[in-house]
Length: 66
Image (tube, rainbow, N blue to C red):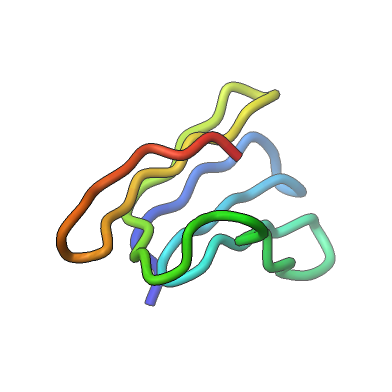
């Protein structure tokens, strides 16, 4: 399930849900990396350099810089 999407370009699209994915123009790449496990990511926004992701684990919410 995807909960949010942000696109800078056709080859730089970020999608969030139980994980964080980036469409690089060729494939969806898992970019969850070192973000906390157990979170559902519900929104994403970027400024071209940084990606900001919001989410919660059912008890605590957070804003994460990717």
